[in-house]
Length: 325
Length: 289
Image (cartoon, rainbow over all chains, first blue to last red; front, top):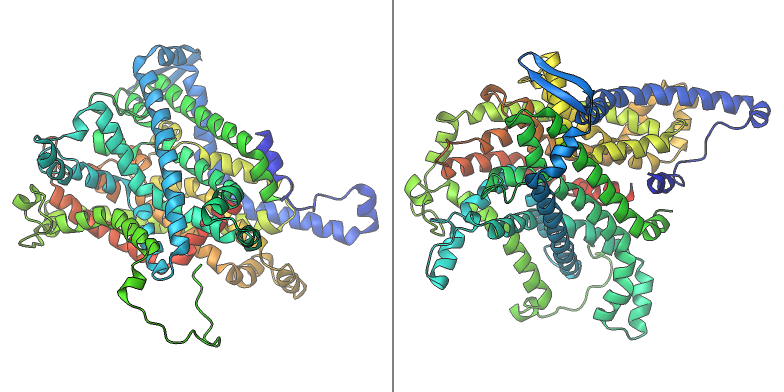
């Protein structure tokens, strides 16, 4: 992660242990330094140990498992020998390729809509004079909602017989619509549910970015006679890029790990048409009990997420980097 | 975020505020946004009061409001157990994360720990890891320890999952506190733990609220890990319970939404009370990290 490392570099504060000669001149300072460092490790170690034991170990184990022949027996699992066969199974499987295709497409689609819509909502909120506090509270509700609940709610709305969407559409087209019954419609319906739940979150992040923009630059543009429209596209949007980059990153990470919504709303269906990588991984692991291929699905998903984020950060590095210094 | 007018500035002479003044583009757009967010929520609450026959229609409101769904959530299904489980897991997780995260965040923000930049980046990377990549080994680990279908298994998993983000938020708040504060405490001979707890922590209270609300919401809403580790009915949390409500062929929507309304209530309250903390967490804590 070279770029993330350099990104945090500048804000990692100076007190690295001073060189020997400096320490000789200021023995008290260096002693304090050492004492502080020891204390730091003492303070940080309980948290770091929990994270290492419960997260780091599983991550490493998952990678090892994905490269092993895994036998599942009644008493547990048994790893034997190194193999790339699990990944071979994956790459040959049309189901995995479809899950990958679906997850990537779904991620791009929802993130683009959410960023555009979220920015538009943020611009409205910025101009809103009364009731902004209430709007913020309302916008936080979908964010804080249990995804499983919103999935059940949208399943009810989309129901092909008594769903409210059907009762709106039925008079218009003359027959019942079961959007969850056909692959493309089901995917779009799921994306709509996701957009409803997540756009407010994007809007709040973007609004904070808008509020923090230096007012004088925008003011200068306005004095120069630029319209609000031009000011937005030429001045404010470019300044907003770091904020948007962070919002996009967060969303890519969440969308790529998509699990709760398809698991409850469509159950991956119809067929396996809305099966995300996470749902596929879960099913291979816990339904089929194929731990080797399951670990391969999980590991490759993680690698793809990290690659996607790195790629995105690389594109935006200049902007994000300068802003944070 | 909102600016209140200074009462001392001479206010604009009395202005007419007819409805036409209110009816501008911004307010109309805001109204549309509010409807977009609120209508599905209304649908959930309204349907929770519908009788079994009415739930199978799309009438705009319950003609004969009934509380039957609420009682069936608690009598026919074991929703009280799920609430109890969720409260135990979310509260203990939040306390643990704040306790461990405060000291770790302080160390990362204020103490000369070597390589803390690297540690912070590593924490960020770990917290970005998709959960599905963790559940299988986590499941095997908990099974070996005998902690499947238990509180402690889920609590320790959530604590680890939510700690990195909490450490980031708290570190950012600690960084903003003036350095003189703790130097005075040190010179007065206060112990390090005492310095953190009684001098630094009160200064970072908003950060503590933010990290606390985020951790609680994360633990309250998490589904995949809870489904994998605690699927037994007795240990199901609310999300697992609501996802698995009903049988293979019928979905008791009325009961589901009654349970959902109950489950959403404490979170809605929390978010309303700590609105500022949540917004600052979504923005400064997350963005400035």
